Length: 158
Image (cartoon, rainbow, N blue to C red; front, side):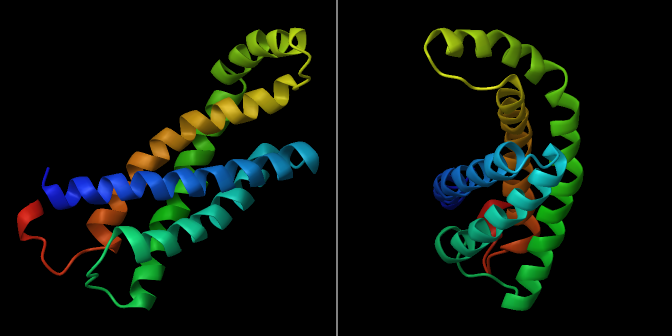
C-alpha cells in the first residue's frame, strides 16, 4: 500500500468516526426515542450521516479528483446508497434478532446492576449496527477510492 493510500486511510478513519457518531446518534433518536422500526431508522440515519461523510471525504480525505462535482456526488450516492439499503440493512436484520440479541440479553442485566437502565432492544440495535458498520466501512473505503474519488495520478496505487 502506497504512502498516499495509507494517509488517505487514516483520514478516512477519522472522518468515519465523526460520521459514525452522528449515525448512531440519529439511529437511536429515530429507533429508540421515536420508536421507528430499526430498518426505517437506519434508512434515515445512515444517509444523513453519509452526506456529512461525503462532504468531509471530498474536502479532507480524497484530493485531486478526476470527476466533476456532479458525477462524484451521483457515484457516491449510488455506491453508498446501495451499501446502506442492501448491505447494511441486511446485516442489521440478520444480526439484530440473533447475535446482537444474545449479547443484549447478557449486557442489559449487568447495566441494570450498575443502575443504568438500557433496554435489550436498544443494545441489540446498536450491537447489530456495529457489525453492519464494520462491513460498510470496508465497502465504502474501497468502492469510493476506486470509483468516486479517483485521483488524477493513480500510477503509484495500482
